[in-house]
Image (cartoon, rainbow, N blue to C red; front, top):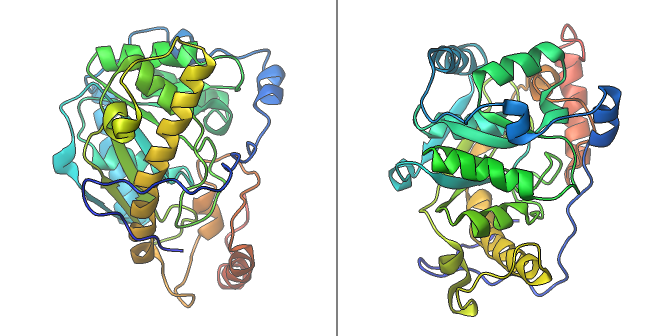
Length: 323
C-alpha cells in the first residue's frame, strides 16, 4: 500500500489507468435541504466578510477544545512542516479526509491567526439548529448543501477569505468515505478555485482519523506552498482558459492529478505511525468516531478487520451505547 515518494523537486506521474470516479456522498444533501425548506450557502449564509482576526469566542473555544481533545480524549496529534506556512491569504488543500477530526487537525497545525475558513458540508455539520447558530457566530465555515449548482458561489467565498488575509481550506475528496492510509479520488473544485483566485496552494497531508478512540494517534504534515504553474511544470503554457469552458475543466483535472501524485505518498508515509496493534484497546470507538459526524455509510477497504475490531470493542465497552 505504501508508495515511495519521488526525489525532491520531482512529482510522480499520475497512473495511466482510467481516472477513478469519486464515491457518492454519505447523505442526500438535497433531501436534507428540502426538509428544512431550502438552504443558503457560502457568503449568503454567513452574511458578513469572513474575518481573519481571531475573536475572543474563537480563542476560548479553541483553548477549551484543545484541552478536551488532549486531556480527556487523550488524542495524540503531531504536525510537521509548520515552517512552510505563508503569512496568510492562501488556499489550503487537505487529504486524506476521513472524519470530523480532519478540520481540527488543520486548526491545530496552523496558528490562531489568520483565521481558517472551510468550504464544508452543511448536511454533515448542521445536524441541529443550535449547532448551525453556534457555527454562524463562531465563524470558520462556509457551508455547501448540494453539488451541481456551479462553482461561482464557492469562488466568491474563496476570494473573500483570501482577500481579507485568511486561509481558505478545502477537502478535495468531498466525502469522509474512503480507504485508510491513502487518498481517495479528488474532485476538481479545489483546482478551479486555485486557477481563478491565483492564491498560493498549501498541500496538507492527514493520517489516522478514519476511526477515533481514547488515545488515538493522528499525524499531519504541511508541505511547501506551490502553484498551478509549479504543479503542472512545462506541460502548461501559463494561459488561463475561459471560465466555465471545457478547457478550464480539463486543466483543473490535470492539476488535480498532479496534487494527488504529490499528497498520496505523504499520506501513505504518515499512516503507519498512527496504527495501533490489534490488541490495543479502542475504548469509546463508536462514540468518538461519530461524535461530530452525521452517521452514514463509511466505505473502507479493510471492512473485515474493522468488523472484528467492532466486535472486540462491543464486548470490552458494553456500557458504551451506540449513538
